Length: 245
Ligand code: 6PG
Image (cartoon, rainbow, N blue to C red; front, top):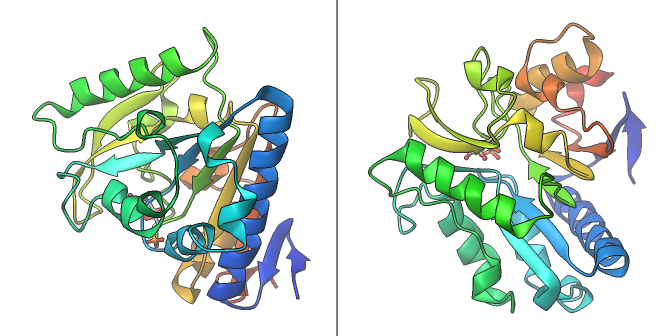
């Protein structure tokens, strides 16, 4: 049974988290397609969304989605080839994209293997700007996770990327992760979304989750995600919500 704690929806297990997220995903897609004719989504990387992607790739959720009217982007990518086990694209392809009929031209992969990550970020930004209405890159749904240190997408605590105001996609380098070089969406595009969905599981995330949701002065990147004309939904398993009691 889902409960609400500090504004977050809390379910018992990671499996229930995937189920709840899949339901919200298909409902958000249906609303977008009814209202605007297509569904623009940015997927998250890391391990947590695997369960969601596997759910979406199987019935009943697979048949509830209009995949032909779905455009898939990524919130961030590690600077590795798409075949690398660390690639967010690879994870999404294996768990979801290889199993659903999204037209290949509607899947916007970040060029993680590019020799010049800054150029790849510029190129991705150009591609996003061209896909949306001029001047407004507004996703219907951006999925995000949260790292142990509180990073979201590849926006790490203390990073100057958190203060980016103009660029929508940038290359970053961090000592806090196994793959140091990354390409990420920036706060302006996260905060232009119609809906952001945080998907977080595990006791090791509880402290960062509590800081973002309970501490009004939190400096963690998650606290910067406040869509100006959209909603943010926090979906947690019981372990990740432990610090909210
Ligand atoms: C990435 C991410 C990242 C991720 C968190 C949580 O590429 O690493 O997109 O922001 O969402 O690190 O990852 P886990 O789900 O693996 O804990």
